[in-house]
Length: 468
Image (cartoon, rainbow, N blue to C red):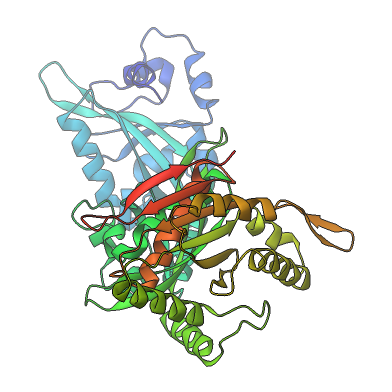
């Protein structure tokens, strides 16, 4: 009820300690007999209390709601109709109105019916002050909010259940902004188990951000891959390394997607991060046990990295040796993976692998680096000079559709190229640079090429080339 409406009702309070038996004869001398029926017809309880807070007048809505008549209410103590645990809150509420007579506020309280049931009523009140400053009492309204309280209670209970479920998951549920710091807005309690930091240490923090936990060599690749997925409005899945509060390095698997408004505006990123260190080490062990991938018959990443390490060692002893590292990312393959069967997917990768392998010399190496990326070690006297032309040839070789029965799959490739390695880099570092360059290329637009030229005097210098 508004302030103006309550001020009208204050006219119903007279200066004497006793209220009249009717609104028309003593509340409002000179008013028409229609006032009482009109007030009694209101569904909201209209009340008047004395200075002590005990009810001295209520309209008929009170009787309909609680079962107490006006006469009973005026003779009963507050404990008969006000929940014992809320009586003190009621008095504090009225006392606050007394010190600020013009202030109106609402408070949800529990009242008791004549049958002993509890009803939730939202109280609004205003103090009535005489000319000499003495508080004459209070006038206000009581509004039934039982349905609202029940709905809020169910929502709160549901929220507690969901919060418990989230906090018991073996990982970290998060919501963050799409900035390079991955500024966290929410993190579940799994944060401390995963990272060693409590959620409050990272949420909206400038001193310590989630990006600070990601191993520096993996940060750019994580950023670029997420940006590609957000631009395409699809979910992403990444595996990378973080460093915990104790300095321990962990492999984590992150699955997430963008949160968009109805208009398509990106509001943030939401997802789940879990520890896969054990699985990653087991995967590396299995890879080391086999030199060839059983699906594509290509060298495994372990064998590929070994060959790349050998090329780096040769580069140290023979500076004139030339080689480049390329990562070929199949742009649409992530989407195709969701709709294709496992057998078709494997045959498609086998087809792509054969097309690329046909372009390589006997001393080159090729491997399936991830589910949608091939890594290439290209060695030739002119490898650095013709690296972009070589990448373009690979793109052209992949333009014809992959055909399997009645299915056709058209693919484009974004390619990252690392040129002029000095021999002082690690094999992992070179592939990571090439993969990040491929991610940057497809973040600009599919079917592009980006080169990274190693500058021995400083950080890698980047050169970008858009194909077509």
